[in-house]
Length: 377
Image (cartoon, rainbow, N blue to C red; front, side, top):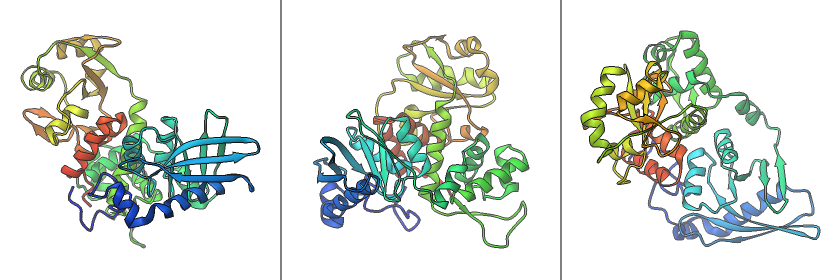
């Protein structure tokens, strides 16, 4: 993805989306200013009179801070990291670059970012007065400032139909009820509800006075849209059942192109490769595929033994070389065909890589910078 006017979030704290380095952050924004912001956000989340000390860390790529809280005769220390605006991708970039960070700070963390941090057992504090920190030293901070914006955000939970509608937008479909109903394969009512929910989240905007199934919304911020979609997709992914398959091969991609792909075409109406294997074909970054992640339709997924036969392997509890999940939405499989292998939607590949984290998250950042993952409206 080429930086330009549409990339509204390409700013100082988007660590992997541009040439900004830690030493440039020090001179451009002032590490002193960030230190003060971390101190103030921490103090705002604590009872009055509790002393807070913050010193800059030495992380080479992102701003980190050593925070000390003096509570009575006790002392609590932790490593904090600054995640900019607080979208899920901001948080995941930070933790990928500084995995030792205990507590993530940001201007205002989104609901998706908070859910991701809690799932990965990290604390968070933001400048809107909210915090959720639980340290092994015994320090516990839970503070939810009652704001109208956060109440509205918390009331909206991503559903499977919302994911389908979002993927429609990510493929370039105009966000109208009629268009989403047609491309996503969901009912008109579900389409209308999904778009309304995304509008409530602040991801879509509709001009005042426009109503009806043919009225179009527009994407408010492209980066925010993909960030929130990816976070929601990751949450749904964690709830999915996984079938693990072991089989022998010399080269997984060659096996899919020559053997497994043709067998899947005969047995499945819709299937797609995602994860690291897909990223290598879309935007090479990692060189080795330890496990191929695969989506298949519900009918094939419902019969694990037949699925294993189609893949030329056997079902196992561990030592798998293929992980199979049911397609989250029909559009998830609508990616390009590369080297004869159908791939998942690029945005879905990005979301799956981010969900795994680590080196896969690095591949996700490279994919997002190299390939247009949407949205396009």
